[in-house]
Length: 587
Image 1 (cartoon, one colour):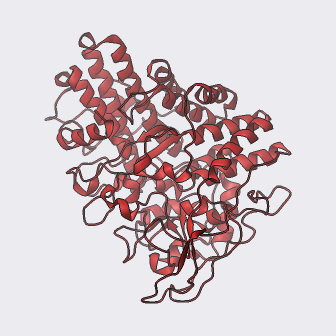
Image 2: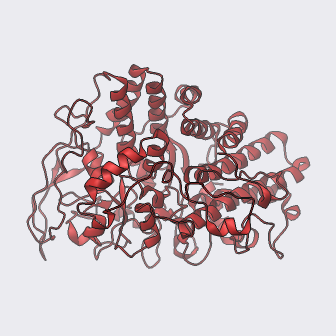
């Protein structure tokens, strides 16, 4: 049975019985009375049901009824934390979802509900993974030994995954295993990368390369890629490189021909996908809780579209990053102009009915697959007409999120509830492009610049395959105006070419980091990448100084190295585990 379908069925029938959210005072304490004990589930069917439950929290929703605010900070792309990067703004109006605005301004405190919610959801996922392992041990005499190792490999991958998300957000966390009889007494006295890597190594050794007909399950290649990425957070590039080489040489993955096929429900689980979080809607759950929650609040908010709420907005700095020179290469600022020296022309402060001519400056074609901007077709929803598509320009800028929007022709892939908020668009959490660019990073770290250039160019060559079509020849969008669009022409002046050489290691670092930004923009990686590269304070303070000119609420904001690299542990958790959990000293 397809994992996507199984997860939906499980959430409907079992999750509220077996996996209550953390209503008790301490999320890591024993389960409350009245729940089904593990002994009842220590059968082959019970173990399988528990495993499905462990997978089901990958969407970050954490509930089966009500409005799941936890799906914002704990969602597949963890977009709340990306608002601290130079890629995106919180968006909407200033007072809407103000707790995410505290992330954006680096003023979040330990009482902020975003740190509470991601803690609860991810440790619920850890608990579910550990329950699988406990039940598996009890049922081992009734399960084939090889199959038991596959189940254990999946559970340990998921346990590593949930801890991985937490370790990115917090400075130190407790690593909870099935052998911890009193998990509430496990201390957080070190970063848990070694434990994450050990669980993933078990997956590498015992998981299959694929599950024909069952997409979404953890494979040996997913475990290999995630372990390599974890090692890169520790700057262990020489250890990550051979893992990535194994995927490249033996995994059988390829880049799909068209870039945007990585964001369509109709082309999911494709040859580029290494670990893909499955989504489904219109399955009987309230407001599409089995769908991709990253579309609930981050798509345009206007009278034209059945979506909400204009959050997680592309920044002007990100848009500028897609500018290219006459050779079709990014403006890296190494012995030449830097991408953000000047802004790409925008319609900030211009009403939709007023005349505005978009720039004809050359840009990387991935810009218009990532960002909705005035004068460019927005998928098949028509021409983006600027300000009337934006909830608040002064707070969120003039651009719209585009990557996780569904096509009008595919509205059946969106929730049928009040707004088409949740969608059946899967999240490609790890794909082959990640592996290529992570391997390029490792090559630069080892001063193997030619290998780095080869992998960067492989990704850039694919970017040239697919252009947004439809040159818009109307420049004012008053009431009743039908835009004139020449569908035979590209929508903008697109240009992208290969690097002919990397003349220095500094240049190579700039090129690889820029390529990761362009390829994965608005997917939740940017902030964590800046931190692991050790350049967050330099990059973000430069960004804030320029951006505060129009986002006046950012004036006086400053990124503090070491402190703002991580977020404080939730105060509620510290209160129920006094003397066990230690707060980040920076807070």
